[in-house]
Image (cartoon, rainbow, N blue to C red; front, side, top):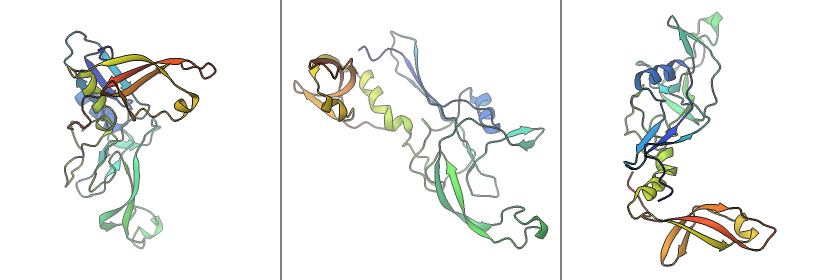
Length: 235
């Protein structure tokens, strides 16, 4: 099958050199949010890389605090320093803290004694919820966590949402790639939906490519379609 052209498929975030990302990279030789799939395809040793522009935002929690936070700093001689960071992508929400707290040195002259107690905080991280997460912006579960969760770590991530079905179909022994010429109009292209399955010759197909469509000439256009093996796949 022409779409299966590599043995290894790597799904990567862009590396950054903040304290936690650097420590994780050195320990595991990969970025925090990576996922690497081995198709066991014996006729190729190549790697196919899918890399996004964002860097991982590693969540941490101190032993005396239940609030999860993304720490983006450098450390020199164990002293935290602010730094410029690569672009990040995170969920944001107003979350409730287990216990009220005071922001350090909000009113330095009063030694923080009269500042109001706060029971909520602005959470931002790769999990959609810091207490009961169901979605993850990583490609896969990291090798190590810097926090604790009461609920199981979510399996709904970028890989399972967008790539799991595609790889399952091109790896399957019954996988097929159909090349054919279809008559497409400008309206067809305007409303094109790659998620819409197409029925041809008694089988369901998923549109993979539309090649050199010319809106000014009414003619057929070469298309490639992947045969649908299953409609649902295990995580």
